[in-house]
Image 1 (tube, rainbow, N blue to C red):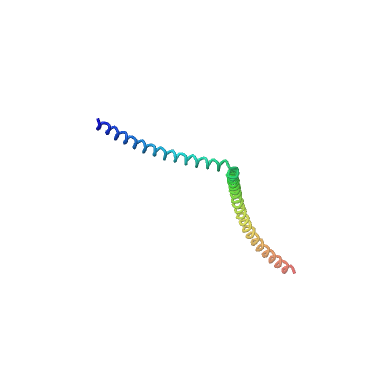
Image 2: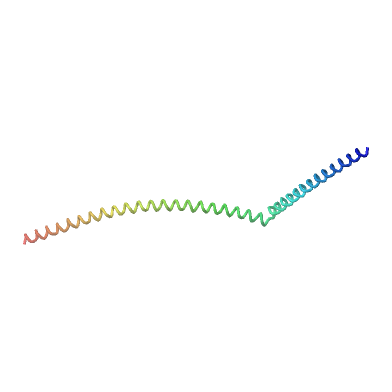
Length: 127
């Protein structure tokens, strides 16, 4: 009979130790949950804080404005490149026309010089 009380006592003591270990684990988990809860509440307070919220909103607006500005500048750059290309083509065309006109002028000068010589020859023959 003593042996059975002793074995029951040992079994109860062992069960008490297991319960104590389980209680400690549960307390640790509860502490972690409370810490996480506190962190979440703190983060929520930061989001709820109007200064931070305004800053985040302002930062978002600023980002949108910068994106719009970037897009506008990109469009302006594309337009400027098209203008440069158009003006370059126009410049090449004008240079070709100038070259043709210079050749034509040279030919006309040669013709004029020849005609003047012919006139001088005719004038000298008439006299």
